[in-house]
Length: 581
Image 1 (cartoon, rainbow, N blue to C red):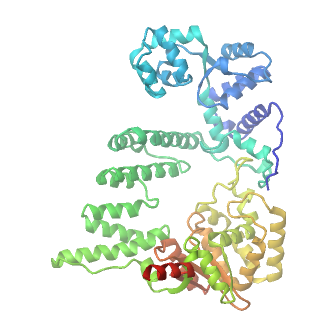
Image 2 (image 1 turned 90 degrees about the vertical axis):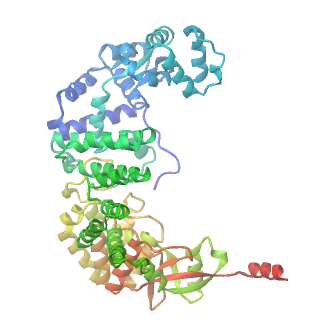
Image 3 (image 1 turned 45 degrees about the vertical axis):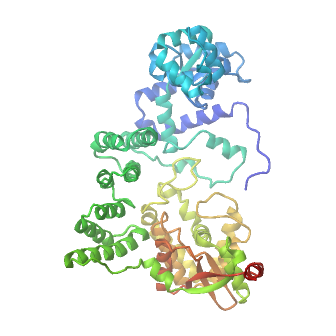
């Protein structure tokens, strides 16, 4: 668990982190670095220590342009001399005519009063312009003042520099973290708060990319996805579709490491096109991927476009190989709807048979309990109170209990360094955790581990040891709290070993999807237990919740849905009586 007070880092901690990153990438990915990246590494190491410090300081700031008068670092004794060194060695460049496309970023370095002070120098009258917002003033200057005039003004009044080698640095950081989301601050967070993560044998780290193409494909698509997020804020959806079709979608042969990013881009674009009333274009976008919810959205769009046979064929395709519970139950329910509409059209009748979704059918047929309306905003607590009056203990566990059960039981299998899924020391989970490869690569070890469920003493010792040794350590499957171990052992004591084994295997087959949707409550007595999904009067049952309820029923795990009906409290009754009188 984190300390109550932060650790103090050494003065040049940031340089240590960056130099570690370079050494790591050189060792792991030296064979796929290009000439420019190698040249950068050698040139960086040839800088003075203060030169390296200042360059990394600039790297860790936002943006690429900086006002030199705003730079001040105590550990750099002569800032002017160090800036000269970086400029001489090509690590920074002074603002010049070549930077005209980036003029908006440069002007944004200055606040509104500073920009207004320029107006007389640019032979502009401040009257009227002072009322503009900063972004409006920036736009006015860019549209009405020649770039050469802005450039001359800045050159004489205040030096502005631009950092170089951004492309090389971005790729080196991408190789280290494996994505664009990792940041040098991850080192800081780890060390300042002394966070506990699983420790790894650095000799067993494996590259995430084995070829240059693997790295470049994922890097390019990741950058493209970032560009898409910017475009959707300013550009028409149809234009973004053209950008996608004529650019990334026109290419083929993406490496497997990059495919998930492409799939996400196609899905997000489809969603954007749907929201903007462009169903045909959305349909085409979804057709670039089979990742959920692509096929569901295609079926719904085909239905909207009155292409019923195609929509029904898509549902049939999903039913043959659903990728998650949402797809499974959607295909079942939507097929019925489509068949009903096709039959209605064929018979030319004006009415159709009312259909209920699978989730609705189960919810309507479930038991109901009356709970005081004082729990209207804490419905699960209301049912826990109701159960306590029936001499049952109950806790709100939802996904937490089952995920933590799995995480504690399979801890060493999750972080197994021999599975080629641990790539750098800041990794908080294996890269294959939420993929089908997780179970494929560990099936034999997992089956062996699950055999311990048949041996209560060995199981209890294993869980106690893991809980004690790992308490507070980062694991995406485990939510730590003091009563966790007790709760897991109560669950183990109530549920038979074979059903527990089935649940663990089902979770392992798809940890992305099958770690959600578990019932809200775990209730038990000395002789019995039950997992309970609680639904308030206006709540609905999700496909994933239905999935686990049916799975539990199939494998002999006691579970049910309880519908809550509100019972007026005494104050409400008095108010109603007063109003009636």
